[in-house]
Length: 351
Image (cartoon, rainbow, N blue to C red; front, side, top):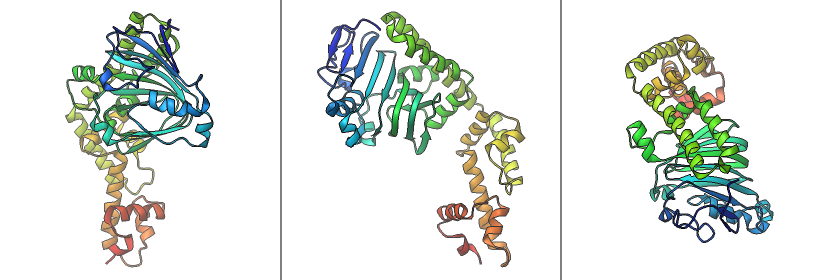
């Protein structure tokens, strides 16, 4: 571990006042403190704190800008959490763990956000459920998940252990030649499909195991290497995303297959990939260009066909039979989806 020059209750840090004016033992970090002038190390831990105050200390010190659930009886009796951090003008890296915890960043907090950085996390252990941009994500050990720091997010976690790499918005804008916040779908595809993703995971793990004990100059180099791999992954995905001609062909071919096999209950992304012979990233990108998802498009086509057949089918044809002809095997699920889509139960569509 790097020699730590400063110690406070629950916190340790290695910088002098001229490198960073923020004193973590005196105030919670906010945008007013800015960033350090160089590469610095910070540690936060509840290990030496009284059990009754550990939860509140952690939420206030390590999770500023988040609305955190009030402590329950177990958290009041004791709460363990800690992090090691590398922070510099060029990015940040965290190794962190905590007991059961639920928190969210609201639109109110996002409206006051000072940065639009990208937080790339690697789950090491425990359970976590993330809610981001209208979707729910179950965290899996070894999986990468990224979110923008200026977007609403919520999570429920238990015995969480993870690594976090923060890429600055200025680097994202310069590397990708675009200044807007990246969509969740774009980032998910990039890290889920890139052949460089395992290299990023390896670099993050190496940083967690050895990075905190390095001199500041070596820490900065290791941090920059991880950042550059992440930016390269995003650059490659963006280049692929900008190939509309090829994607249009994939979408048209997939749409023909969907119409042909709509009654097949096996119809889905895996089915289309086998028939088309393209990569998962290419298929998903082709539908994303049309403002669609693969599963959502298939569901809509099935519902539209059922709706049409219900108005045309003879009286003796049951609703369940018509639904099966369109690929719906679960009657209850079909009825619910139909009502959500058309605002009425299927029986009211019959003449």
